[in-house]
Length: 307
Ligand SMILES: [Zn+2]
Image (tube, rainbow, N blue to C red; front, side):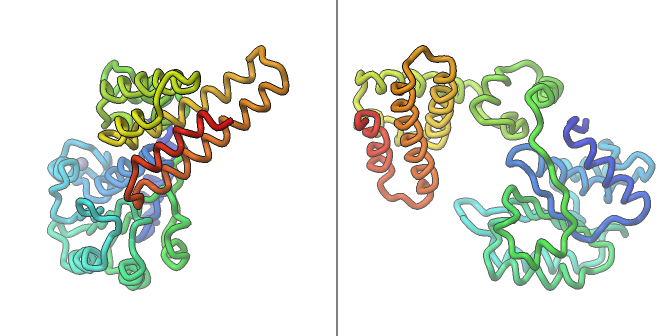
């Protein structure tokens, strides 16, 4: 079933397909976790489905093969385990695959997930295929940050934008697809990213969010040790804990709007909270490279006592 916030884009694409105006390359610009991968699969099924009138029907052999990523005419390129970049060898393999005759006699589809991770050489290799694509080829690039892709790539793709859904639309889709769950809490933790939320360990995320809330509340009144917390947090799920840290700060900042504190006290508190927010964002940005995460985390947590 098509999520409500994706219906305008799927309708437009379906019309273009019916009118035989489907471009050979599309760039899906998604709010991360709001359905870029879903739309890429929908598009793949659209052009490979054997039921032209109902494509993508979701039930024919082609659609089913696409759903389990086993269709011989569709190939997905994504980050290899532990890799930070999509490499030129991967792009070359994809291009070679697309140049072969299709098994079904129709489209060949190449999907590139997290396309912003294409390194310079890989992007250059892809450019040639975008300039002179083989007939009946559909290239689908998915990214949440198109500005990280070379302009030469962006300009050769038709853009499809996926907006972040609102909370009711996310909740409706999650309940329809996955039954009841702590969806509202999880969307608060992860933001309006229902496709991501559907995949996370909900129980763990809710438990960690509560733990982090309690720890930071204790720390803010001097009843917790930043060193101990930093050591505890960096042992596991640090990304998630930092996300919860950010959410806790946002909640505190919003709470000040209804607080009974004096103007000056609110100003001081806001300064402190924004300083912490800066620290958390720097920490997040450095997570991929930081050698001593514990130290970086400890230095942010120590800021609680600075003001
Ligand atoms: Zn089908």
